[in-house]
Length: 425
Image (cartoon, rainbow, N blue to C red):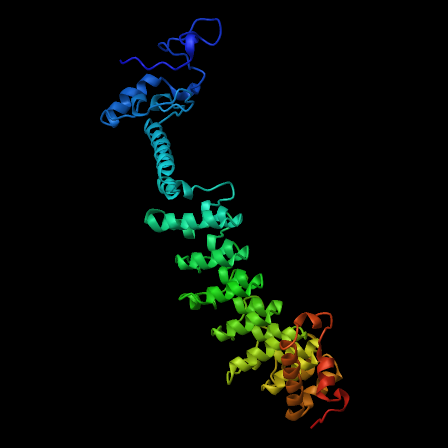
């Protein structure tokens, strides 16, 4: 068996670390370098000769510098088990070395990234690959270099759509961090916009939740936008439900213009976007109500019932939202529709108790009942007053109105209608 090259330890080479006799390891003393369970190093040499056809990577394969600390001899790597693992480790080291030398010669960093492209896919403790890390830290130059490497190497193309431990793909992470430039770059590289995170939110859901209208616009430009615009998350909400729920009027308009479905019902209570819009009477919610009803056109979304049988008018009337009621009535809401809740208590056995509740039965107060009985002209006046107010707000700085809660009373006052003296038929 060939004698192994001794380590460069000066005059002490051949003696043990202590004063005792050296081990039977030839003329080198590196027993502390290797783990105790690696077995005899000599056995790897013969095995590698057999498996690699005699082309194992020994010390003659690499020229070591005089102060070289890394053991470039495959036989000296402290790796137990399959000897091919040692060969692989040396090959990785050689690739790094070749890439560094080429970079030193050409100043081209891409040569190193190309050599190490598979290492870009290795993840950290958060499950982030190199692309995630660049986005996390807002590092645009590394981000672009990694994408260039992916373009040149189809074998690592999966890097673009790989989720981390939070099920966030690089695209979802870019949306979460409001990084529009990264979002656009990833979409230009065909990033998948349909992959959900751990809550079932695709990138469009995430952009809407964070009120990031620029990212919403960017995502809706995708050829696959229609595949996500009406998709439910794990809370059974579409992007339009979420935008309505938070009162994001600009995003609601944008989603409606891209043909988001207005009749989808969320999973818990069966509420449509219009049911959610009438839950509040602030100006953004009134704007959303009008936007939905105008977009629907002849579609009868004002009378869709939720799982209780309540229409949006039931909801608005029970909450005492006067302006919402007037707008719904203006667009054809029917106050005579019954929900699925009986009039009386369980003890009542008369036939009347079998009937559901109309809007009149759930009205919060007499003012709501007066509105329900008013004429279409009165409803129209309220609607036109609301439109005028919204137009005024859109033509001025919105921040100047934030301190003032614009609710039904101010709109009725602007319309010139006395709520207590409506034209009741």
